[in-house]
Image (cartoon, rainbow, N blue to C red):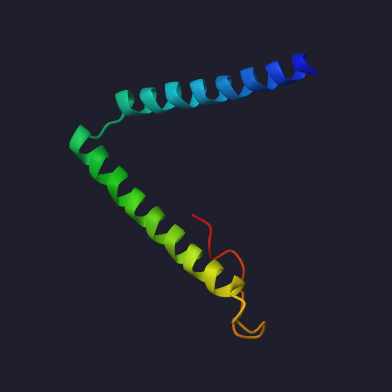
Length: 81
């Protein structure tokens, strides 16, 4: 059982190492300037945080004990980033 746990940990570490290497190569080989990349990343981050906050508010409302089951309509897929 310890052997499996060790291999799972090494798989997770390898995944994150690969993600870091890929992110670094992407930034180095990007045709945009550093300022443009930072601006784009900032805009994407702000947009993602806004969507997460909206989803959290909706989840809090839907899980509230005061909320009636028919008080909302779920279309599906509205919380995907």
